[in-house]
Image (tube, rainbow, N blue to C red; front, side):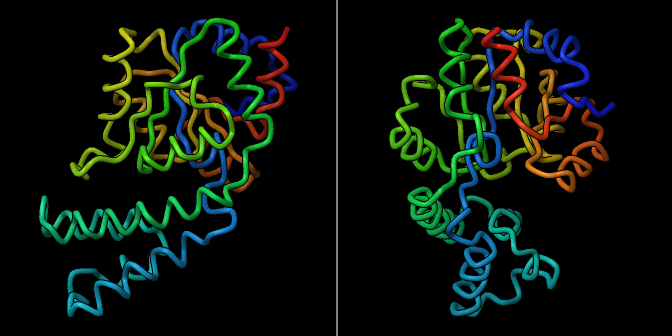
Length: 237
C-alpha cells in the first residue's frame, strides 16, 4: 500500500507512535550526499583506478557500468575478501564521500525532524552503507551530531555486512537496548527495506520523487513518503 501522507495521517501516526528508537539511513533521508559530487564519477574513478593496476578483469561488464561505487566495492570484496586491495579501495571511496559531504544537500525537513524527534524523547541512530566518518562530518557541520551520538553505524572493513544485510541495524538495536518492534527504520532503497525486514524492524520509506517511490513500492514497501513534512507536522502536533 502506498501511504499518501496527507490522506492517511492516522496510519502514519500509528507507525511512528510505537517508535522508541528511529534508525535512519543517511544518504537519502538525511541528505543527498552526492548532490554536488557525482556518485557516477566516483564509481568511474574506482573502476579506472583498478584498471590502472591491471585489474580490469576483476569486474564484469555490468559491474563496470553500474555507476554505483558500492557495486564496485562489493564486487572486489567478493573476489578478494579482506585483502589490502579491498581496504585501499574502501579508503578511496571514503575520501570521495568526505569530499562529497562538503557539498551535500540536506533533505527538505530532515534537520527539524531530527531535532523534533529528539526533543519528544525518541532516540536516533544512523544505519548506513556510507563511512561513519562521513556521517559524523556531515552531522557535525549541521549541528545534528548530538541528536545521534554515539549511535552511528556505517561501513566497516567487513563489506559483506553492507545492507541488505541487517548487521548495522542489529548493532544499533543491541547498543540501544531496543527490541525490533520498538524501532522504526527510515530508508530510501530496496536494500534498506530488505535489511529492515530481516531485522524485523518496521520500515518507513522516503522517496524524493515518484520514480523512486515506485521502486520502493515495487520492492514491497507498504509505507512510502514523498516528503518528510507530514511526519514533522505529526510530531509537532
